Length: 625
Ligand SMILES: Nc1nc2c(ncn2[C@@H]2O[C@H](COP(=O)(O)OP(=O)(O)OP(=O)(O)O)[C@@H](O)[C@H]2O)c(=O)[nH]1
Image (cartoon, rainbow, N blue to C red; front, side, top):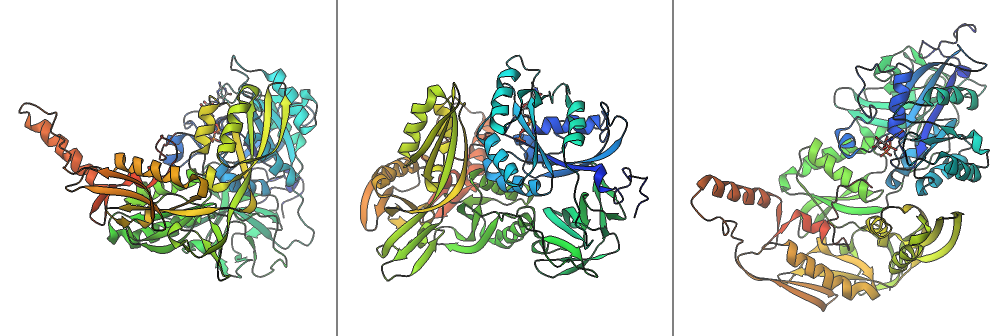
C-alpha cells in the first residue's frame, strides 16, 4: 500500500482512489469528441506538441481515413488543478474515448461502465441531436455524473446561449452550469479538466478487498497477443498475480500489466479505481471476453461485476472469399477480428452460388462495411458480401419454430406466422422537415408513437419501425430529405407479426440464393421489378443472353434481359496508341477479378449489395454517417 501522504499520482498502480477521476466523453457524431480529447492530451502534457497529430487516439488507419472513432481508447493523464480551491493539487484523469455512431452504442455502454462521470459534449452550432439524447439516457441509466459542455464556441455560427438553455432544460440544470469550450482553439479546456476533478465522484472500492476488474475492451496485437483493457473496481491486481476470468474460470499468468499514457507504461500492478491493460499471453481471442470480470486466483472474488449489456447482432450478411481457397484465411481473420469486437458473430455456411463462406452478424450496416473493409485491407482477402438481412422468427405450419438468419433458409410454402424485429426510433428534425420525415417513416411501415417539440423549431418524432426497413438506406434517405439536418437513433424493441414473403432472383433460369430477400407482401412486386432492373444495369453483358427474373415461389413477378456480346472497351479508342489500348484491357481484367461466377454468369461484387439497397446510391457508399 502506498503511504497515505503520497497520492501515487506519478506511480501507476499505486494511486489512491480519491486522486482518480474516470470519465468519458459522450456526444453525437461529429460534435468534436476526438478533437477535444486531443487538446486534453496536449494540455496534460501526455503528448507533446511535436508528437501531436490530429485524432491521436484513433489509431486504426480506417478510423483516420473515415474520421470516425471505432474502438474506445483509455488514456491516463496526470493533471494539476489550475484554478479554485484545489489549485496545485495533483490528480490522475482516465479518459475513455467513445465512438458516436448508432452501430457502436455497445462500445459506449461498455466505456460508461468503467467511468463515474461523463462529459456530455454538444456542438454549439448544432444543438442537441438524436445521439446526444441516446447517450445521455445511457449515462443516466448508469447513474453517472454528467458535465454538460458546449463545444466549437469559436465557430461564427455558434449559439452557446441558445443551446445552453436547451441543454439545461434537458438535464435539469442551470444554463450557466453548461461549460463552453473549443476543442479546436483549446479555449475553456483547462477549466473543463478542473471541473472534471471537482464535479466527478471518486471511485469507491468495496471493503473486502478481493480484486475485481471489468474488461471493457480487448484487442488482438500481432506481437503481444491479446491485450485486455480493464477498470479495477475493487482490490488490486499485482504484476505477479495469477488472474482468473470469472465467467469461464480460466486461470492465466500475467505477463505484463500497466497503463496507457498514451503509449503503454508497465507498472507493478493496478489499484482500485485505476484503468489500464493486461497481457496474459492468451492467444485464443475468446478467452478474454469483454464484459467479463477479472479476479485473482489465489483470493478470488465471489461475485462477478454486473451491469454489462451484451451486444446483440442486428444485421446478418454472408461473407464469401472470391477465391474459394481463401476460406481458411477468412476463418482465421474472423477469429482475430472477433477479439476486437464482441458484437461480431459468425458461423460457416454454404451457398450454391458462392461456395463456402460465413454467415456473420453485425450491429448495423456501418459495422458490416467496416468489418468487410478490415478483412480486405488487413488480411488481404477479396470478399463478396451478400445483401444484409435481419433475423426472422418463423412458425411453420407444423408448429415448429425456426430462426431465419439467411433468406435462403426461409421455409417457403410452409410458413404459419412470421415475426420480424422492430426498433424504436427517435428522429430529431427541424420543424420544416416533419412532413418529409413522416412520409419516409410511413413508407417504411413505421407507426408513430409520439411527437414533441424540444424547442420552437426542433421536433422529436418517435416511431416503431421494422428493423429490416431501415438497415439499407434509411439513414441516407433521412439525411437527403432533411438536407442533412435530421438525426436518428434507434434501439431494439421486440418483434411484430408481419405478412412477409421471400422473393427469389433467377439468373439464366437458376435461383441465386445470395440474392434472395424477405420483404413485405405489399412491396414484393415493386421490389422484384426494381432489383431485376438494377441487376440488368450492374451485370455486364456476357457471351450469351441472360434473363433476370424475380419470383415468389414459382410465380415470376418481373423480368429483364441482359443482351449478349462482350463489352468492347476499345470501341471508343480510335487510332493506334497501343499503350492506351493495353491499359484499357488491363483495367477490364482488373475488374474481372472482382467478379464471381454464378452458374455461367459473371456477377460483379457490387451487385451483391448494391442491387438490394432500395436507393439509387450505392450501398457501399463509404461516406461518414
Ligand atoms: N471550429 C471548430 N471545429 C471543431 C471543433 N472541434 C471539432 N471540430 C471539427 O468538427 C469535426 C468533427 O470532429 P471530431 O473530433 O472528429 O468529432 P467526433 O465527435 O470525435 O467524431 P466521431 O469520432 O466520428 O464520433 C472535425 O472536422 C473537427 O475539425 C471546434 O472546437 N471548433
